Figure (cartoon, rainbow, N blue to C red):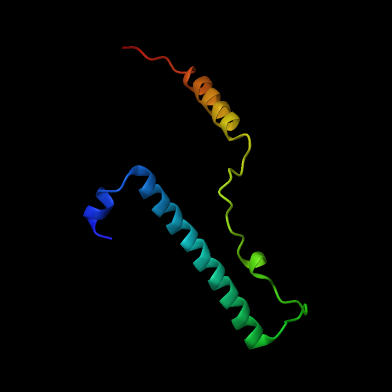
Length: 93
């Protein structure tokens, strides 16, 4: 895309393109994991364990969900600790 095309987009259009780019990257990672499995099986068979790994075992696709459900609470706690630490100092101005 040309810069003028990008600048003429709305925020929503640009966001959609960015999300699609991330999805394309995930697709490429899954494809590379599948290639790795195929190359490993071709070179050494099933291996010592006798089990062929799956793509999902090699590459788990991110879901986009926040991993920590209490992320806001963690941030509030860190802020509280920072305030307590700063209260140990006296500032003169």
